[in-house]
Image: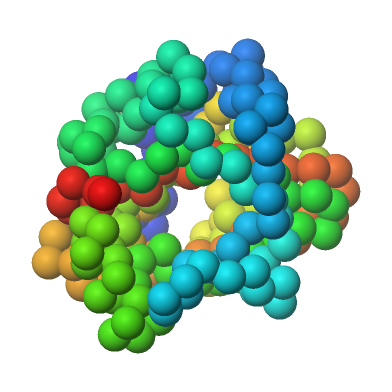
Length: 200
């Protein structure tokens, strides 16, 4: 797989076209619908909660046992990141309806000592994020990195990879990112989060 590098010279986002095929993307969307989607939550200090001011989307979680394709995504994620599958969270599928968005945020711990302690117990903060774009027949919905002045345009099957922390679990400020509002149509993505230690 060929990765395209973008960044500011000290921090980079990697884009891999055709990480998944259009047929595989469609299968993941169908599987998520069958599994059932619920309103997306914000990872909070002690419990997850819905915060409609920060994001508007719907989520399904697909464990490895769901299908051979989910297991393939897990395997490919391990290959491109260099971290074993046991360090991964389950595959998260996210559906953004028209008007859906996710305000800029960090994927790792930025919610204070309670949240950091909770994440540490599960395998440490989220170290690497892999976003896979499942469709592109909509307007808006780019992934924006405000501190870098970079946006990633959705393309069906493309993966975007970036680091939220360094290997000492220190937050990387440039990883601040969000999902721009979907202005026409519906957006589908899936996420893989990788930790420095086995995730449980």
